[in-house]
Length: 451
Image (cartoon, rainbow, N blue to C red):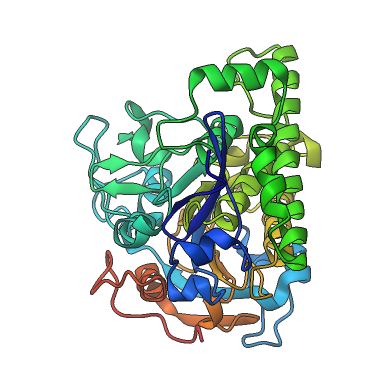
């Protein structure tokens, strides 16, 4: 068995039907020997792009900073971002016109999800003739996804449906998907962290062999145990910095596996046996695991494009951990009642805390050139609904995190003209990803003031 098995720009450890992709290691002999691209050989990290969707809009009074420019103060909902404040761009004034009814009547939650990354109007149907548009992540995946093992990675927390009616005559396919490979083909998110992890660390897209997976699970051993011999050989051939990076990375993978195993154990004892195996009982643990998996995917260059639906639009999930026992969607129709608005604000802050923790993880993860994963990322966080009460689709809650490999100047609040198409942001991101488009959805041009 050879020490390394390489695909373009990537190094793997292999053993017994399992493959573990490694982070960029400047001193790895396989990278030099197999003629990686000049950028990789020079230690220049790739650019990543991700989108995180939150449901039911936000309480904009506690979201939008009063000041523009770099001297803005973080409002209540954005305060969890304080540790990564200089990596955040708050983008006000963006809109999704195609999430509006435009003659189609009710169904704002379904349209919001469908339009978020497509900037297109969803055909109102609950049948099989769904149609919206290619999403920005899939446009990029089709153009540059060939550089990685997986063109893109889609994650979520709610297992949805691809048929039936979920919102005022709109198919459930619209409500539970933000990623669309074609106008009629959604990319359903994986909600089971164990399955997402297994997919990430296998030899091919078809997954680890059933025999090997069964043996590993039966023995409760780590996927890394099967490749440890290769890892030890590699360790001795690396420079000191890369040895530390390899040790750190292997520990991170083990930690994710340990938490997935714990979720499996807890899941067996849950009274609700319909819960997918491997999904933690607590929402926050589920979200953290999925963010960790996205980090591993980016860190190993298994993919450079990801989407994560924290909860689908229209979600009525309660949040008892933070003292909110009522459903999120029900509360979002707050009727300007202060007690309901306070609970919405708590949910918004809770979601932001989870997102901020992920950004801090990316900020603390170093690349081969000393930069961070967050420095080399563009991560959009937000919704296609402004406020759950009004169902408005302008002045959306939108953040852009990361420096885009040095092409974005964060740490500012930028206020754009009202109804500036969010598709303009997508065009600007696609340019930076090396997947340019002349137009995207209802875009009118590139978004300025990013750099």
